[in-house]
Length: 106
Image (cartoon, rainbow, N blue to C red; front, side, top):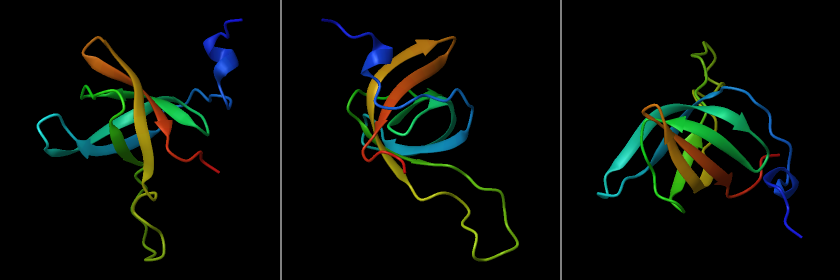
């Protein structure tokens, strides 16, 4: 029996655009930091619109920027979320990345 992609999902997707930084190492071995956004997100992964094409199985660190806070106790971004590229494609000059979180979000 073949399962549809929706039946294989481990958690429900939420269609929401969240700004996010992607940090990784490109094919030339150079570290990069790009601002991107989610197209949807779940507890186990996300679908991202990226300015950069990345390799399948590439490991990334994702962080969500936070607005500046007058309080020193508020971080300027979330702790990094490790993710691995599971699929990629392109649409209108933007690269679309399906990433799986190394550890599901709580």
